Image (cartoon, rainbow, N blue to C red; front, top):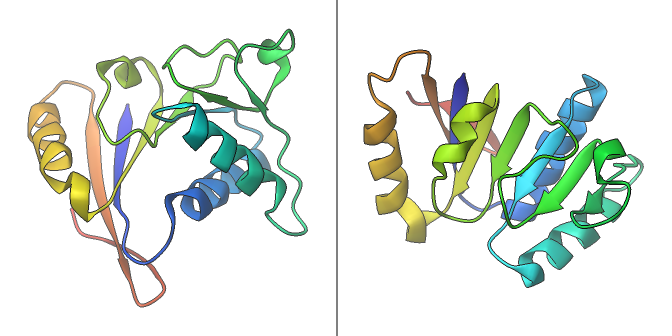
Length: 144
């Protein structure tokens, strides 16, 4: 299981999530995006519709077609769409993410301490590969 920590710099969490979702869609992989509340889900929903020329099919969890959605937005780490990838945009690590093949944990400066704690808690865990990414020069640089 791979966990990618993304420390956000100048980019918005919504645009970074849209880029991750687009990349996974190109690879024909499903994604569950977990946000903290309904307002965050609504903002992410708008961002995924407004990604420009790329259409990112998605829905907010709770609908009758959840199982068919390649990208599902939710406030819980349950994946009725059978996603093997989870993006945590809620600011707090969720142990349920370890049931996925890959987790994207996004955080900003205000969430640095919880992210450090999650990094430490995952250290030495069997089958967990950690990667740390930070924004640098308009792109992402791997730091750990």
